[in-house]
Image 1 (tube, helix red, strand yellow):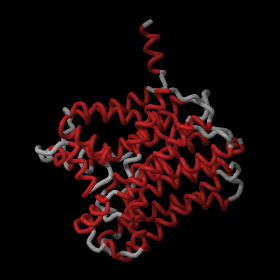
Image 2 (image 1 turned 90 degrees about the vertical axis):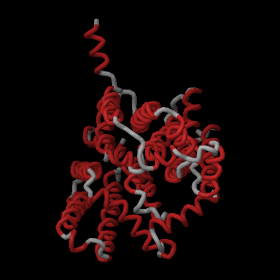
Image 3 (image 1 turned 90 degrees about the horizontal axis):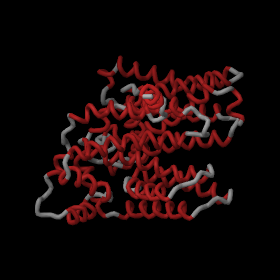
Image 4 (image 1 turned 30 degrees about the vertical axis):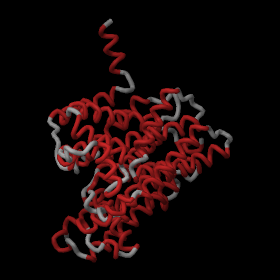
Length: 411
């Protein structure tokens, strides 16, 4: 009886997630406040939390919900409670990704969950504590987890799945939190705008989707009208990027692309390399002509070539304007040929073609939008988390395609 229960437990589709959480539990045991966590932990004792958050809204940021949670964990609550909640958010992230990409009940979700766990583990661990454990996770990891969960409501309605009252409550709580962060608010706006058009066209529109969309729009208006954001931008320009406001749109675009792709290409992020390999391999399996196969391998070839080119000539070209322009051109070619490859791969199924392009675009634009911030370089790799997650979702889709018959795309 015990052996049978153990076997059943091991076969659970959630086991990969449990293993992943156990792996992340070990470093969590040694986690201490650092970076911005320390600053938030010692805010003026004479100020109430409400007063502090109101002042932050006036002079620094629109992320008042996120920073309220941040201060509670950094200043008022024992750190072990934060550790438990942070591991819970890791689980919510992988759970939400799994639910988002599942297509039917007969699918082997345990295998899919193994791939999700592996890819999440491949995200650089340093990303989660660049500005301090609590500050970074509440602003990025938790936003990613709650944001992706917020998309599940839309998926359930499109797929005619039932949504319980409990799921709706969790959805709106997650939505309010996720929309308080600019990158995720933009992603949700794009996805729900397209989703609502689809639902109206197919006469599936629901009241809770409309309420969700209104919350997203109100959140974006709140972000754009926050007085603190404008003041913060000016102060950050003085601190991190003097002369940022004088840059042309082209110069800002160069910074936006280079700051994002330097991590994925120069630093050799495994997720990105796997993504390029899987994309090309799927095209190779399905294309009857050589031209699509050549186009599909171009991003991988450019990535490998440029990575080692920069490594060889790093000392001669460092801080060179020529390197910045050259990097921008190569990176743009990589990104463009990736999109062309996606269009080629899903040529026989326009719906899948659109969805894959949408996932890729949302990930890209979430990081590229940093071009408008003076902290485009100073913010570090944590702002690329949503881009990495979009690559993970596409990687899972590509793996499923490899395991399916060639007529999969035609369904």
